[in-house]
Length: 203
Image 1 (tube, helix red, strand yellow):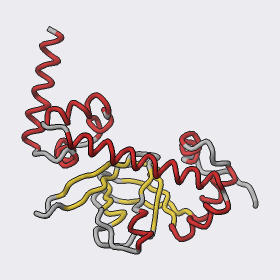
Image 2 (cartoon, helix red, strand yellow):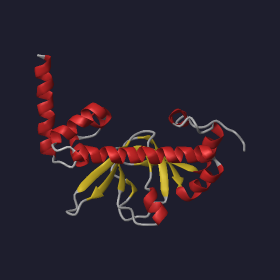
Image 3 (cartoon, helix red, strand yellow):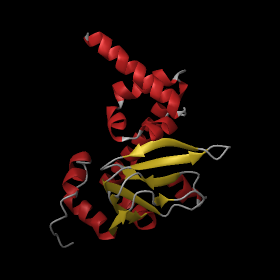
Image 4 (spheres, one colour):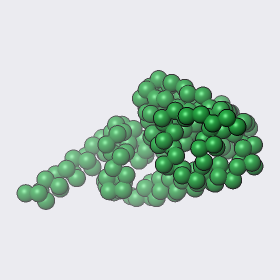
């Protein structure tokens, strides 16, 4: 295989997934396409069978579902260097129950899963990363279920404040409310209460 200099964004991915060799990143690069996605556009729509996965190079994404009343509920977020996929939809060839949508203008490194999967048999390092991504996803799902088990919007918001400040800093209050399965008004009251508590503590 001919070696060449990889684009700069691979430096970040190499740090996050050090087990993958430069040659293997080149292999991935040969099947990858850089795509620009506008705010509000979908990487994967409800009801479509997943055919692609991607690394987020820049921007933010939300993974959302619709409840019985048709209201949007967010199940996780995707930030720079995170992985976008719905493997269940791809493996079962089933319509996706999850929509993956850009929350701001974004750039992704998109790969056709059909081309990606055979590489796992040939390169153990890539299989290792695939297992790592699956573990990360499982941990995020477990954490989200734990957050939703907390009784009040105040407890849920405080958990994010203490454990996931990036979500508080980067995501709008409306979308945080959809992630915490509560109303924007209830969340706004919880945030004001915590602000007052911190001011009183400082006084």
